[in-house]
Every structure is written in structure tokens, then in C-alpha cells.
Image (cartoon, rainbow, N blue to C red; front, side):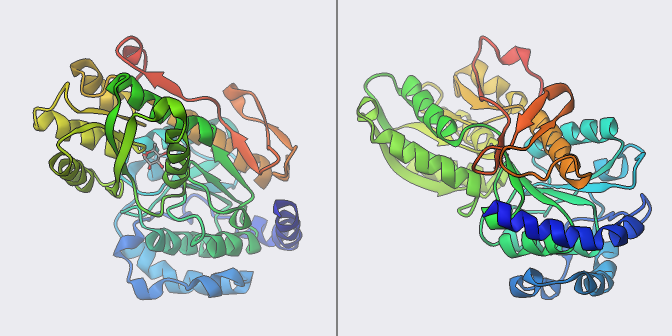
Amino acid sequence: MKHTRFSIFLAIATVFGLLLGACAPTPTQAPTTAAPATEAPATAAPAATSTTAPAATATTAAATTAPAATSTTAPAATATTAPAASSNLTFVLVPKNLGNPYFDTANAGAQAAAKELGVKVLYQGPATADATQQIQLIDSLIAQKVSGLAISADDMNALVPTGQAAMAAGIPVISFDSAIAPAGDILFINQANTNDIGAIEIKMAMDETGPNGGDIAILSATSTAPNQNAWIAVMKTTLAMPQYSKLKLVDVVYGNDDDTNSYTEAQGLLTKYPNLKVIIAPTTVGIAAAARAVQDANLTGKVFVTGLGTPNQMRSYVKSGVAPEFALWNPSDLGYLSIYALDAIATGKMKGKPGDTFTAGKLGSYTVQSDGTVLLGPPTIFNKDNIDNFNF
Ligand code: RAM
């Protein structure tokens, strides 16, 4: 599937190659805004239109979306502090949402890669982790003829037509962190093996309950988040294994990667399930909010929290015993690797097909796997013994 799709992309890209070269945004032309949340929803291009949008349509879209872009709130400061580019390539790192330290750290790695590669990387995302907002933003970036997109998808399938529209306009699309379905991108930069991430979370929950097990609940991100949903599916399969028969999953709730929502959902779990032993939050936003809720409810030592978090957000909870252990990869490396992969595709160093290899600076060499993914590496488990060795 990816082979065929990419062949089409390449053919179109070749046709528009010179045009793109001539029209590639200079630093001053580069998109300077994000937050499509403030744009009128009516300007959102419907998926069907995006699917077949030729370059000419994209140009038209530029005219219609440009005013909205200039009137929206300024993007993250990083977008304006990107290093001076030595080439005319402008890539955009699109997180699920802005204001999430996890993605800010991914952007720090992306900026380091940009500096090394002599390209410009903008950091623009929706205000909330919402696929409709994310699609509006990406449509605007397509219209502005950016040189490549690295996207953490808010919805696996909803973003396919948008990804296809970008590629039809000669803009390479990769997903990172949270995958677009294969038809909508060239490859996916996966932070760690999906099965490993799901299984580790159940193992950590069992570590926290001890051999007697007990009730556990999951506090996730959004209900459409491709990465969390994949991990939850693995968690459910893992729970069916005999060694976890004493863990009982009583609920799955969604905090939408919003701190306040996540805190409220965690409080709800604590109230609804008096015998709850562990909250597993496979989201850096959710795990920090759940830990705070347990601490505020004076349930430290009675209810434990685990899942995926950043060491800086979780340090105090590890030390107080609210969250004795949790896992994550290095988000900075994820952003760094994503930009190297995108640059390798945009500059023709590789097509991004299974079996293709590329070099990612300090991280070394990577190969695109048969399923169209590039694997960053195994996750790290953090606990009181090692957490002070990490600062992100
Ligand atoms: C949140 C986001 C992100 C996920 C991490 C673990 O920051 O949902 O997509 O990978 O948690």
C-alpha cells in the first residue's frame, strides 16, 4: 500500500518539483500562525475536497485561509526562534495540541535537527487535541506550500484525506508519536514497540498492586487518539494473560490531554471505585493530573499511579510514592528523528519505503520497517533510583 501510494506521491512531486522550489516559503513567507481553534470552522476544507486538491486548489486555499492565519494568535515562540535556515526548506512539526510539555520537548529535538540540517522547522498545532482543528491547520499549511509535515495525529482515519491532499500537492507527510493510517502518510516514526508499551504498563500496575492485584482503571487522552487506543488494546490483551488474572480493569475514561479534564476524570475514578488500586494513564498529561488527584485526596500509598509520563512532571510523585514507576521514551529524540526522516525524504535521500535507510545525526542509522514504521527504540522505566538522571 505504502509503495503504491508513495509512487503516486513521487510522480506528482516530480511534476511540481520545480514549482515547489520556486515557491518554497522563505523565512518571511513561512507560516507564522497556528491555533486554528480561532479560525471559523466554516473555513475548514471538507475531507473530500482535500483528497483531490491539486496544486491549483491549494493555491486558492491559500488565498482564503491566509487572512485567518494572520489574525490568529501567535504560535509557540519556537516558531519564531527557529534557527536561520541555510536551505529554503521549511518543515512543520504538528503536535496533537499545543501547551503539552511532551510535545514541547519533541520540538526541542526537532529544532536541534533543523540546526544541524540547515532547514527551518516551525512548531504549530491545534489549541486542543481535536482532529477537526488539526485538519484546519494542516489545510492552511498545505496552502502555504510548506516543504514537509511531521504530524502527531489526533485521529488515525480523519487525517487520511488531509495527508493525501498534502502529498498530492508535493508535500511529504510523515506521522510521529501518533500515527495517521497508512494511506495518509509516507511513514510513521514510532517511539517504541506498541506491544512493549502496552505490556509494560500492565506490568508496572502489577508491581504497584503487588501479587494480590485489585481494581485498576485507565485514564487516557482523547477517545480517538491512535497511539493511546493501540496501547489500550495491548493492555487488554495483556490483562488476559494468567499472571495478571488478579488485576481487574473496571473503567477506561478520557481526559482529552487536558490537565483540568484529566484531573476531574481521575477524581471521578477515585469516587466511583473505592477499592481502586491503580490508575494507568498512557498519556503524559493524564498521568501528572492523576498523580495530583491522588495526592490531593490523601490517597498516597492506597491508590497508585503509573503509565507514561515525563520525568520532570513526575519526579515529586515518584519520590512521594504516589507513582513509584512509570515509563517513557525521550520525546526530544523522537522530534529529532522525525525531522531527519522528513528531510531525507524531502531532499530525495530516501523515498521512505520499507527497507530504505537514512542517517539521523547523533542517533545513527535507521531503516524503514516492512510495516512502514521507523522505530526510535525501547522505552525507559523511571523510578526513584534513576529519575534524577533525567531532565525533560
Ligand atoms: C501525551 C500525548 C502523546 C503521548 C504521550 C505519552 O503527551 O498523548 O501523544 O505519546 O502523552
